[in-house]
Each structure stands twice: as C-alpha cells, then as structure tokens.
Image (cartoon, rainbow, N blue to C red; front, side, top):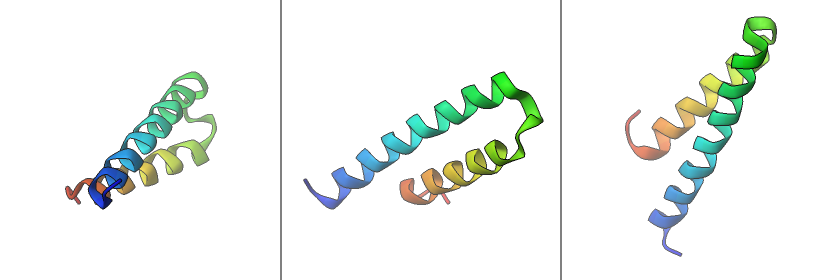
Length: 53
C-alpha cells in the first residue's frame, strides 16, 4: 500500500468516525459538548489529510 493509499484509507475511517459523531450529536443535541469538540477536530483532521486545510 502506498502512502497515498494509506492517507485515503485514513480519511475514509475519519469520515466514518465523523458520521457516527454527527449521528450522536443529532440524537443528544448540544447536551454533550465533548461530541461537538470531537466532531470539529475530526473534521479538521480530514481537511488536513486531504490537503484542503
């Protein structure tokens, strides 16, 4: 697996994590601020790995 493929794989995993966090946020709303922080950090990591940030 090339480095590029590893980055793409990691981005897909982070997208799955972000989707799960978004679903939890949708269920719990703003009751858990840690979820919002995690969602923001995962989003930033995805942008950084994809070269958009």
